[in-house]
Image 1 (cartoon, helix red, strand yellow):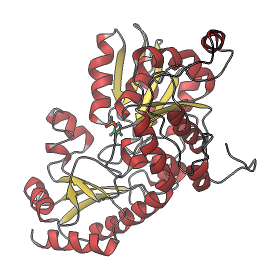
Image 2 (image 1 turned 135 degrees about the vertical axis):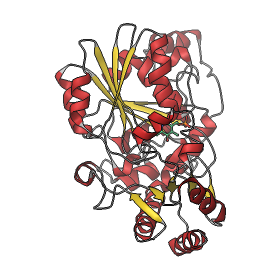
Image 3 (image 1 turned 45 degrees about the horizontal axis):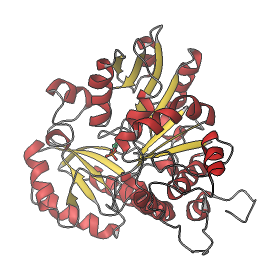
Length: 395
Ligand SMILES: *Cc1c(COP(=O)(O)O)cnc(C)c1O
């Protein structure tokens, strides 16, 4: 347990927050690789199952290492409670399914991570849950999509891959007016650059696979909200459907949280520098970066984000041919659909992450053949600039 009662700053919380130590007094958080727990007596087991003794019962429900990760995330996010999941998609699908039932309606921003869009468009209707996808850049689109049975709003901001932003406080206000809940997928912003709960969102979900691990080691996710919502909607759903995180991966993610501010700061600085470099390059027709004054929604970015994020989207004048040639010529930046890693990564969304969308849907989202998405790593930025300079000079 923390020995200090002072309100500690985020970087300190991410190193120490939520830590519990065994009788050995280990420095690092312990990895409790166990499914179950033993009880001192039949009476002790009875008390635990009655909820009179707060100890652990089974690692599908809760586990000491996972508990440390959940507590640390709560401190970071300003949330009352959390559940750690095996992947980001386990977090998103549980956050939606646990609170929706047949006859309900969901309004979601159409610019979503591919699997999130599949859940909203394909999976929810299988259970009698209707959904409407809207252009999230305009708040009135959320309002006009509201139906009498609208129960949940769902969005990500900035979006993948075109880094559009959605007015989170505005959507939260609409949700409150009709007693609906707003779920925000906050992966692209990270908990350091954007705090959806402070902006009025009710539930925040992460793929911890991205910046929270950020070093290519494991999948993970987390759902955060107030205690009442978790108790009423998520608690039983989570226990009985089993999306639980492995304690080993919870430990990996705890280690990731320790360095999250250092990495996100360096990645954001690198992203900003690369965005400026690309904006001045003759082979590039457009750069989208939430930290630049020419972002189409720079005012919303300034209002709800503390930084420009670690990602840059840009478009090459030479279309797909130029995008492929540039990617192939890069020597430091690697081609990968992952993001938020300490290694700089680049992807061509039209032929990878967003290839399953119709041409029309891709056009709507601005995913042109020449569009690439760059995820800045923590390398020396001069090496990244030189890498892009060399790769683009060959076009
Ligand atoms: C990666 C990602 C997810 C899914 O996370 P997994 O850990 O891969 O399951 C969801 N939303 C966004 C925005 C993502 O980038």
